[in-house]
Amino acid sequence: MKHNILVIGGTGKTGRRVVEGLTQQGHNVRIGSRRNAPAFNWDDPTTYSQALKGMDRAYIVYYPDLAVPGARDAITALTEAALKEGLEKVVLLSGKGEAEAEACEQIVANSGLNYTLVRASWFNQNFSEGAFLDFVLAGQVALPMPDAEIPFVDADDIADVVTKVLVDDNYNGQTITVTGPRKMTFREVVATMAQTIGRDIHYQPITIEEFKKGMEAAGLPESYVWLFGYLFQEVLGNPDNQSVSKDVENVLGRKATDFQEYAEKTMATGVWNQEVTQSI
Ligand SMILES: NC(=O)c1ccc[n+]([C@@H]2O[C@H](COP(=O)([O-])OP(=O)(O)OC[C@H]3O[C@@H](n4cnc5c(N)ncnc54)[C@H](OP(=O)(O)O)[C@@H]3O)[C@@H](O)[C@H]2O)c1
Image 1 (spheres, rainbow, N blue to C red):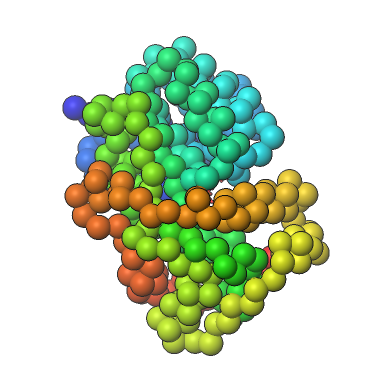
Image 2 (spheres, rainbow, N blue to C red):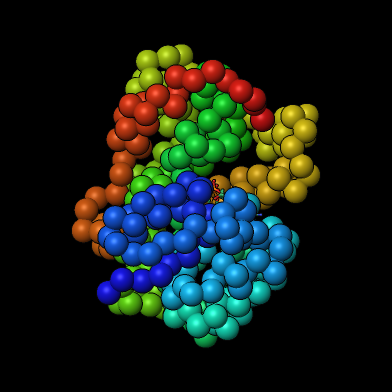
């Protein structure tokens, strides 16, 4: 059966890939973006209904993170609008080990809509499409939490899982935890990228305070600086959060992507050969 599906964050790391996957399967996809028509803007709840109109399912990616103040109100307003517009199911992208995100998961679970929750570990693509790309390009990756062992997950795997559970009602009411196949420290992922790229890239351990000061000095907004502090402390600071899940394999019937494989496919795109633009 073909569906009409709104992909919020459809121009971002996971959303872009979900759009591709659903389109390939012949579903009718609308990209939820501030740049689309009708526009979707989390900061303007009056845009929600227009974007949801005519859709029967939606992938919800909140920006910048479900942990920020305002996320609960936005998720409440969105699910209410979705119910009003007659949607039958939503899939929420959530963060593994974030208590604040779990509050938003509960809002979705209690909304009256069918739903699947997809809880993700930190993405590999933070090093190629996100906040840490410029560090890699500069050859110096200065990040806190050197001892944290993180089961980094690939955005391709998240998107494949989301694409499947969006249209498969067997996953209704379930929480799928998506991680990579092994835990790695920042030092290990940096060494893997350096070897694959064939360039000197160093990992420098710093404190969370030093990282936040660097962001402030680069002129990043206070809310963004707070969010990174929270994510480093809350998500990476708790070893209980860093377990490897088998859910990618269980849902997709294939192994989750290893960081080495991510590094190789990313190298082939040329993204790590560009000039540094800015640095946080
Ligand atoms: N990165 C990670 O490691 C990680 C781990 C676990 C969970 N997550 C979750 O993933 C989600 C996205 O994070 P990400 O790092 O992957 O970001 P991303 O996908 O790169 O996010 C960018 C997307 O957000 C959209 N966007 C930005 N501001 C918006 C606004 N005001 N209204 C509507 N859309 C807006 C952008 O669309 P336009 O610019 O086209 O409007 C773009 O599609 C967050 O909820 C986060 O909690 C991330």
